[in-house]
Length: 146
Image (cartoon, rainbow, N blue to C red; front, side, top):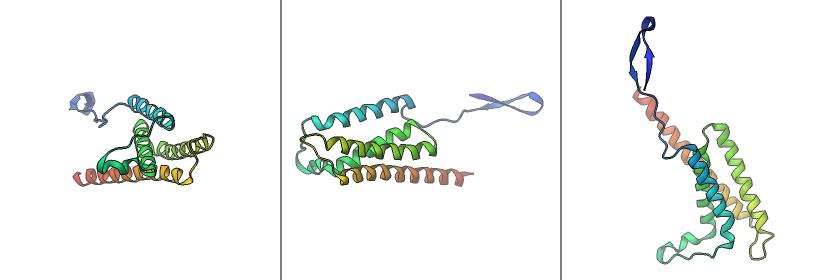
């Protein structure tokens, strides 16, 4: 709580501080982000997991790329706030995706695929579009109240 001063220096009623609606603080999101990066870098050497039944589509390569970069974008976006950071995050994550594909081209049991990099970009853009829609609706809803 903080106090707002009234007329002539007298203290007015207590006004609650604005509440940030975050599940974790920024440091936790950064730790989760870099942990997920480490997992993605180690995943080519881990054995592939095949899910049974209707979940077999989840092992499809392009959906994995979209999902992984959607999650990376979410974590990195929650670790930073401003629009400039969002723009930087999009570029950095896409360059990371390209770097991973280039690195895979040097591995004997892996190969580079431009469509994997495009799937990475699709995951990034999908998150950013959904997040922008969320912010727009939140702002629109807030503006309707007042």
